[in-house]
Length: 129
Ligand code: TYC
Image 1 (cartoon, rainbow, N blue to C red):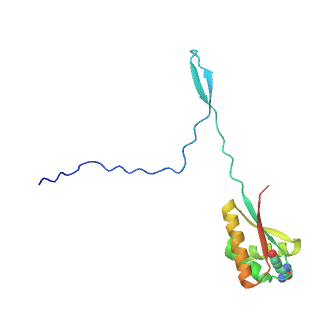
Image 2: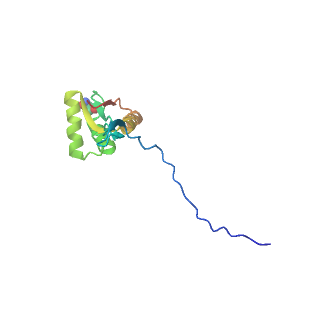
Image 3: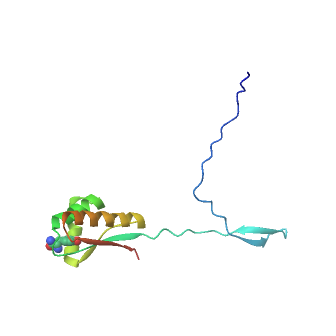
């Protein structure tokens, strides 16, 4: 029996997750009078960003808030202490600005850590103006 060897080339294709945007055009006449499609420059808006805001309360220990800011918001100890004191004095403060999903994850992490430690610490995310 003859075994035929296949000498073809294996083509790998990678599936794109999004189609490339179709350029917007308007019909115009060129110098020769022919109708041509002129491309209109398109601008993509930057994504809406979200700030994580932490709220003051009378029970969560200052040290716990400082540790949370270091752990989940990558602040050094001095910056974390300043943010914590600002929240303590003003009632609230911004811990960081992130994409929507990342901000929501940070809020979950803080609320989980606070809940596990038995502290009433609250925080939320809101769109940046
Ligand atoms: N006010 C709290 C206290 O005096 C400290 C605190 C700071 C709590 C910031 C929450 O988001 C907070 N122990």
